[in-house]
Amino acid sequence: MLGGLATATACKKDPPVVRLPDAPPAERTAQSFVQCVESRASQCVEAADQLVGWDSFYLLAWLAGGSPLAILEALPAELADHADPRRVQRRFVDEVERYSSTMRGAVCTANASQPIDPLIDQVGAVAGERLQRLGLWQANMLDIIAVLVEESHEGLGGGTLVRLDCERDPFRVYVATRERDGRYAVVGMTTLLPGSLTGATAGSATASVAGEPPAREVVDERLRSRALGLATASAPIPEGLVDRWMGFPVEEF
Image 1: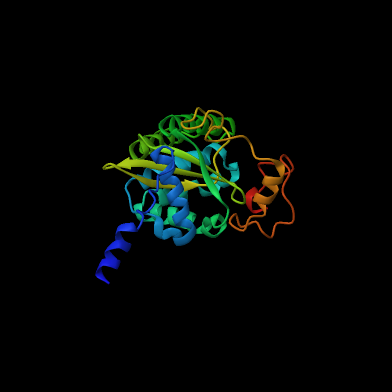
Image 2: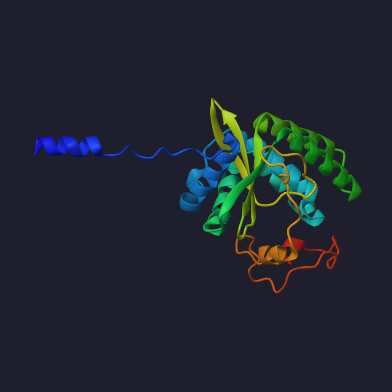
């Protein structure tokens, strides 16, 4: 009997070697994070000082692309939340929770990545130009944007923004990663970025991190997304239908 067991053990094949995908570490980290969110939601979020840097970058992106009325109404409260690290982390947790069920089964795949430092400067410049063009530029707005840009570089400097394309809603996910003590960590996630954020990529010769504008059918489905809170909207809003200075946030129309 012992001889038979020894023979069977000797004939047992070695387990197959599992190779990691041939992709940059930042893209593999982003892919793993999304897969984690699909099963564990916000439990995948780690406490990190860099979350303040991502929150600064997200605020700049909002100033560069958000509705003027929403900026007028919400900017003071957003800056107050930004000053509290616990609220910053709570904001990231809420964003992950908001999309966790939507991303489950959406089949999201990392397709492009780009250093985030040039994007920080770019979105800061776009935000400043846009606020001036809209007449929202005040004496302290220059200081606010400068501080947000500085905080973004401090928290995200050397990091990477990864784009994941999905077969279903939310169709596109952006994940920010940064190397810390020899380990890549996720420090931010969003599904929306201003169209002005374009540039060269790492790991993809044709697609930019911002990507091409989505097709109209994708926009229609996105507007009805439960994650966006617009599932009860009667119809998508054609661009230009609602004046930008109407007395309600267009996002809630």
